[in-house]
Image (cartoon, rainbow, N blue to C red; front, side, top):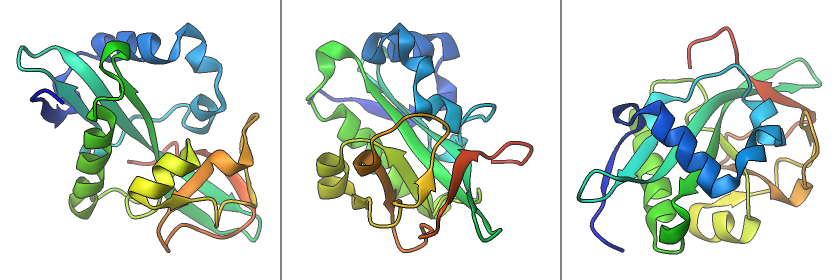
Amino acid sequence: MDVIALVPLAAVEPEAVEALLDRAFGPDRRTRTAYRIRSGTLPVPELSFAALDADGALLGTIQCWPVELACDDGEIVPLVMVGPVAVEPDHQQGGIGRALMERMLEAISDCPAKGCDSLMLVGDPEYYGRFFGFTAERTAGWRLPGPFEPHRLLARGDKAPDCAGALGPRVGQAA
């Protein structure tokens, strides 16, 4: 991997981030269930980063979002949804996404937002489990606002709730 700088996502123009997301995931990305889960929220700034090359060109981003699990027993559990992790297509498989994930995980200890210690994502269980400790052990009862593959619904850590409930955006609250 070439030398890259990891900077707060806020240091990058939002239009550049959106263009990267389109290149990495395609223009229909907004129809995915993940977008419904975080609809109406803004990224958690303490956990959202960009990867820049030596010339300042955007190579990758990670965004994290305030979401909540409304458990069927009435408990509301704040969580942070990790992703998308996006890397320029011609730089994928070069460690940039992994570096962004590692930087985000390092930032958890300094994150004041609710749910920073309870992460979830929709992604490849082999990759996110092997390298970052995400599993589907606690997510079997979670319902999402759209189609998803249950084995790809992952959470990290003992603070992730193990209840049946509906996952959705945490709106009307500060991240």
